[in-house]
Length: 242
Picture 1 (cartoon, one colour):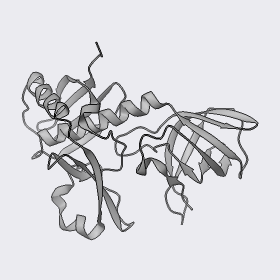
Picture 2 (cartoon, rainbow, N blue to C red):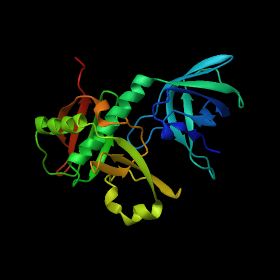
Picture 3 (spheres, rainbow, N blue to C red):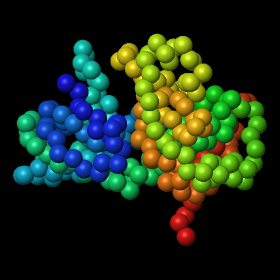
Picture 4 (cartoon, rainbow, N blue to C red):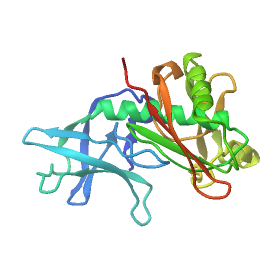
């Protein structure tokens, strides 16, 4: 059975206990986890794994799929780490500041896509210090205008939530899919939609997010780049706290 993804129900969990179901040099798989596996432009979580006789750093978290098995989550330990045996109870602890920065930035990118809601998203990457979205656009406003719009949406403190729709409902509403490079996971019967406020944003997303836009804090538009005739990259970052 795949790990129970506790972060889907509560992205604010910082630690949990779990039981090892697989242990090897290629990673550790657990019966449940709070660690997000890299996907959709968001990096995998890092942190620490502890058990009675050992401790190891988790350097990355990735998706795993063996032939004929459902997708699972694997925790990549530092090289030469001790390995807990299958059946061992472990405690896993997130590098919380890094994860929380990803949550803030990922939600910020959804606001950025809301500002350019008529432009398809051609690529993106979430980072703890800076993040980007690429749009199929011939031109964009200046950095100051985009930053002003982003920070207005942030200050309005819109609630961030989720709802689920069936695969069939999503297929009947293709306009919900904004990204050209990343397709929402289908085939499991239902798809998670991220919701921001009353109509600010609604689109498929499996990442972790803050509970309200105000939690993002002030952001800056770091640069705007041309990546082709009609491809514009907008890079944003969290403003230094004063």
